[in-house]
Image 1: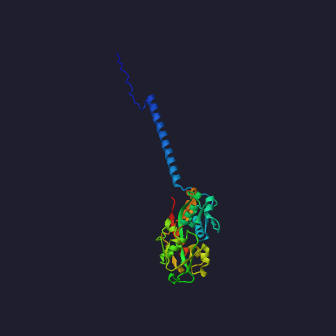
Image 2: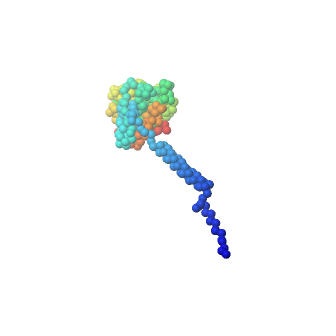
Image 3: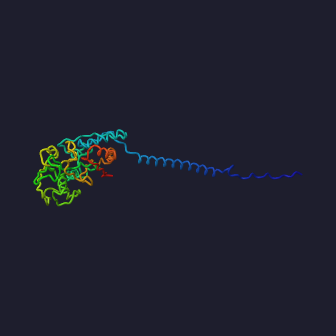
Length: 316
């Protein structure tokens, strides 16, 4: 009689015979991985784009930056900066507008006729703003560039010791430069003032003839307009002359009877602009060029000691 044996049951292998529930779970995990990878890639791309945007400089406007300047040395320096910008292909374009007598540079800037000025020192700027409170906070100095060295000159005398008692000297007729002349005389020992030195303080900037405490040489002072102090030099005993004005009147700085201190000088000329233009890439680029070693070398090589670099950033 034949014997019957039961057929063996097939063994269960989950990898070869998954249940519907396990299939669904595996599909869900796969989709989640794809989604996470896509999200991670998107976030990485966004972060990279933000980093690149922060690192890349802001585009420079194709509109020229209008800067109001005195012809020499400031105008010369800006023309040199334009050469540097062209060589660098930085995109900076300058429209150099040379000053004319009778025009108020700060008014032109305040009203928007120009974008920046480069022709005044800080004491003059401060006195102008004090007289025009509507401009306070609207105009700002971005950087210092140079000092037009102030000096005492004479066609008649070779030294300070030769100046006779009672000599008449031409001095600035404006308060923002008069202290420079009087401090030179004090430094030379020809008179004494109520303030020890030209330190940029409000007391120093207010110095005038009323603050002379001793005048043993009985010197006389004739207030005179800036350019006339240079033009009149052959006809007077001695005259105080700004460095840039002396430069344009063929006066040798080596002939000065006395010069003001070039270091820590509070009369450095400033680049002035409107507050809303401080972040303008053109202003930022111009400031970078003006503070460069190349511009410092240009000043030292071209102005024979009448003009010296004084490069400081005043705004972040």
